[in-house]
Length: 269
Length: 356
Image (tube, rainbow over all chains, first blue to last red; front, side):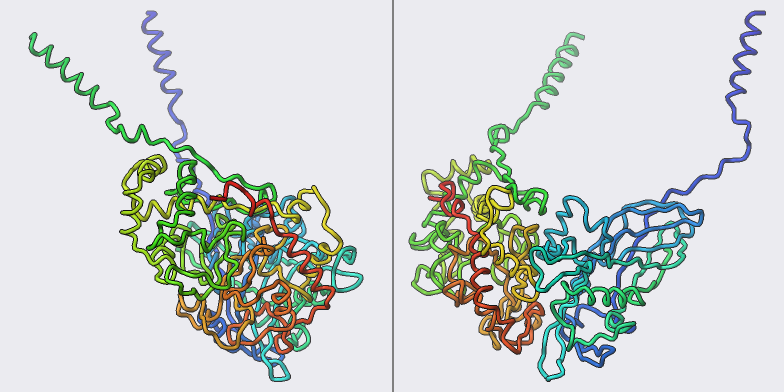
């Protein structure tokens, strides 16, 4: 009798261990990474390596110019889910458009598939720009991507350089360098001239994008827009030594945040 | 049954024996690791040095490389060594405009200084970027007819028959069989030890001394886009290499006798581009520019101030080209020179570890 009782208990335990839920729990898909591709164009015409120093572009001020260098920094790619959850890898990417370096970038974060508002920061916001210790890779890149201390320190946002046909008929150079705006009591900048700095990085909102198992997002830069809107850029007036000029950095920020970046092709493979 | 037992014992013994290390040579070859010491002013500022996985720094390899660097037997007539054109007292460059090879023929570029080359992240060496690694660079001068004018088989034979070298190669690389690859590896290990980071400016960065007011103002000129704007090619205090190791046309000529990088790539957009040299140790590295055309630092500053010449590949960082440059004041020129000289490191050129 004892044996029968023991058998019943053991059998019961076995049954108790069975799943009584006939429906399978839904399997959550693995979180995914998202790839970005950064491309450049001049009012829709793609800019390739062969165009640098060769192709003549005419800006909104009717000035003919050639590009030599286009390097820019983006940071804080952010995915905001529809329930408000924010995913931000907090990393950054320095893109050398001419050489094609880092034109493909995968932020170091995995997110669930779904619909997201996607954005990134052009340049570094103040929090990133003033990070204690800085960034050894950016210090080492491009001869030092940093900004001199008398200009408030931190890092360049963009270096766009080239030549243009000046009104006087000569060929001159331009250095369209965007950095954090820095206000000085007097120029040239030096010890004690810096009054304050103003964050002129800006957030680029790419809108709502469906993120699937393998999503690639193209981010277009229309280079012509840097010279166009709302400030028609006159290179004869402002082509060089723009880093320490507060008003010019504000003007470049206004142009940059007004149509330079656009969402390109979103592919789901 | 007894035979089976004996067979089993023998089989086990054979298996044990086969597990023993049969590579006696490998057990004897134990070079001593000698990782580069990172100077304080480089730490947490820039990326670590580039050391090839197949050529780690070792005590034995560095010692061998140093011996080879100073050995004239690398040249066809035993008359010149690497150090003949890369003199330690000149920060491993040549005080002559052009170095002279074994035939007496001159080269056509100024010898580049050898310092902090382990931190050349782009890994393009020589004025024209013709070498893709330090090891690669080492191959050139030995066979160049206007330099050492030797052949690698001859070098290998010479070193192989020398009494001391086979054992030194054995200690450094585990073989007494000398070839060009091991020679270039050893010299590269030595050259990677040539780290310069103890200038007055470095000491000021570490809080050990203060710059003079003139040096400090010179730094401001250096960092000011409207005056020197040197930093876009030559770095900041946060990039203490004082070079971007990239290639630029700095407005020397309207026409090019020497295409520089363009001669290597064939790209007309790169005609007349040369690698930015480091501004370290300018006190010792005259003459200046790829062709050594400027005998003094004053001439260099004058060039950037009012001597710029337009050409199709001019670097956009050169300003006011139609006016020859930004025309620095004499005071700014003097201050800039004082700052530049503060980047010179006497302890580097006098380091006995780097002397023969």
